[in-house]
Length: 391
Length: 153
Image (cartoon, rainbow over all chains, first blue to last red; front, side, top):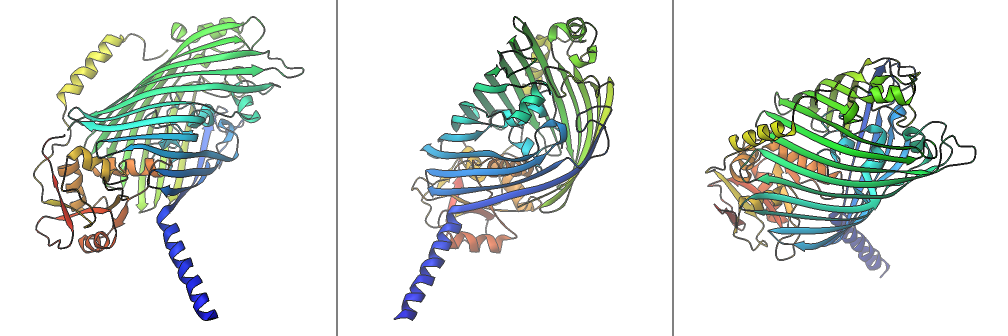
């Protein structure tokens, strides 16, 4: 009798294990790089060769039923001065299927949702699919990575195909948590208060015409941050509002690919720097990127990325005037030329190598109070190598 | 100074407009690829757009509620290339990118990868809701064949 009972338990365990295996999927990646950004504080303050290019992620998805899934990803990253080192919850949300037919799919996402609006907003954190180790900073400002990557809230995505082509329409509303280190990176190392994102509101449409090599996208973004000054703070209470209009396009050919995103972003500071401070600027930027596929395993890349902090003062002359000559003009822009390559030397392994030549320091941390001491070169460069494994 | 100076938005838009209408993508053609599915699948015809959503893992259930299990071969397999180009109208690297985007953002999963047609047939035969492809003319008894409609519905 005991034997029968044990056999039944074993059988039940096997069935449950099979059911679990059927409903649960786990993936992950490990990437380790070596990087150097001379004459800037992009990675570290001394510009030496660094191993601070580490990314480890593991994600799991559990399908409760065909119309409902729970999914999440934990990641450890070390990117030097760009973002706080450590473990973070990249995303954790319920995926609820509202409409699921052969022609339409509409999903509701609740929780910490990953940003799917931009061309590479998902890819930037996935070593094996992102085009370069270091993304184009005009659009994918690394100091803003954690804020832009995901937000806590709600998102709706609709996908369909018709005689015109394939469509993806997405709306999201949420807020990102900003910890102390991120705040120091964004504002100033001397900030003593707290920075909160009040909301991040995005709407995007992505379209692929039928039998076309083109993919097109448009994004609208509106976001607000509040700063609460701390005791003895050099900064004051205030807020920052950003509104972005962004276009994306990608052309997919058999042996090469062209991608581009162009953005215009209105940034308004009220107080923060000091009571009564008010600054409105329209930043512009974007990149043009070509990838050539030598074969299934090797890819070459060339990219030009430009960013102007204020379209009215593309040479940064306003920064010199505002700071009374303390901050050089090259903090007003950042233009980068990149050459790189990827070699997938095994089915789950790859090696990336790239070189960036940079003019300007407009996309370095901290954003509000520039680090003039460690960024005293108008021209500087970055090189990076990275090995990645995924499963 | 930025290269954005001196180029008006109108010129950029005109350039994009010319490029947009002067280029074509992958032309769907007659193919010797046959799309097959487990006998549980009660769909007999699909459009290229519907098949693209299925094989790119964006469509996850059949009309009968069964989970869609996508089975593919490796990127460098000629039959997989034919499926992508002749049936789906995309290139293999586009499909792979889409799979990885979904799997590493929580919105989907990776397809099952097999090495050859024998493994393809075996997997589809044994898994409810499975869909894949083989060469036209290959015997696919006990499996459903999905025709590819010429026009998008």
